[in-house]
Length: 105
Image 1 (cartoon, helix red, strand yellow):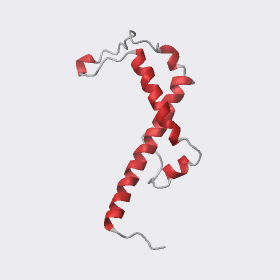
Image 2 (cartoon, rainbow, N blue to C red; image 1 turned 90 degrees about the vertical axis):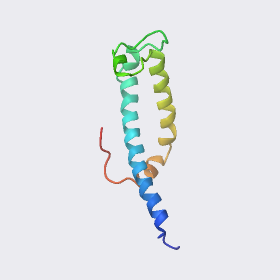
Image 3 (cartoon, helix red, strand yellow; image 1 turned 180 degrees about the vertical axis):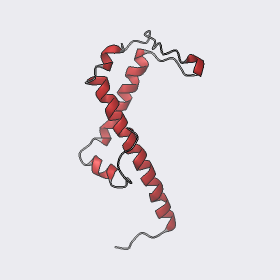
Image 4 (spheres, rainbow, N blue to C red; image 1 turned 30 degrees about the vertical axis):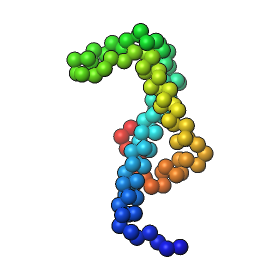
């Protein structure tokens, strides 16, 4: 088999490594959030209700007001996004191009 030496392929793969590091960090953060949501009981504190506003007083910063339904929906999307990342063998595929350990959590 011929080695891959094309500079464009090498540049692309170096960019892939950066994305792999980011994706691995995001998965670790999503895993932590999912644990807090379910096992940590945060889901019991936030009603899945479009009328229940999160009173974090951040509107003055230009940040949108979230409802309990917004947060619950977001956690549903996070859970769905994690499914392929947790398939059998996926972790090894995700980890191989990464450079160094997970940082930032």
